Image (cartoon, rainbow, N blue to C red; front, side, top):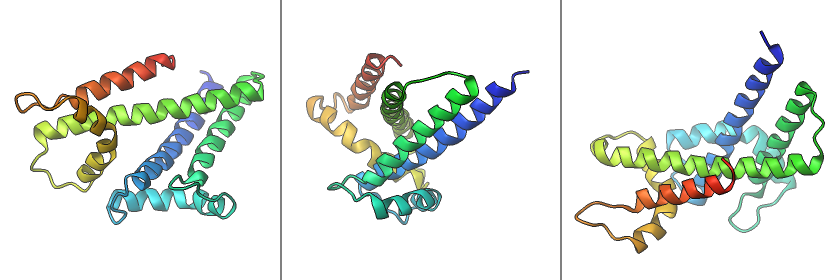
Length: 178
């Protein structure tokens, strides 16, 4: 029985879920998703308690919701500091900052990886489904797939752009040591 490992797991899981919610909200803002969609409404309600106060202090830079980026980074830093304290590790701030940025980039790439796989599966089986999540998946993945669709046109009615996007995402993840 290792209570510190269980506590680290709990802290990591809860903060990662909340950071993922902020990331999804940021991505949905970026693609100008329909914010009347139930999933969007859920993400807004969950993340507003953190983002609204931050937006009063941190203005957006162009279309980028800077408060959301800062919130994700701060949550990662806090998570790593708490885990370091529980584990008895003495990390330098520079290491923690670089690791937090790397972890956020990996989260972004993994999010797109999963979304593209879901989109591919939906293209096989979900053409008749009317779930409110489906249009959001297509909206979120469109900006990533668009460059690949331009380079690789459909062959025999088969769109290979998701395959090459997944290869590129996996390549980037391997470069980052994930």
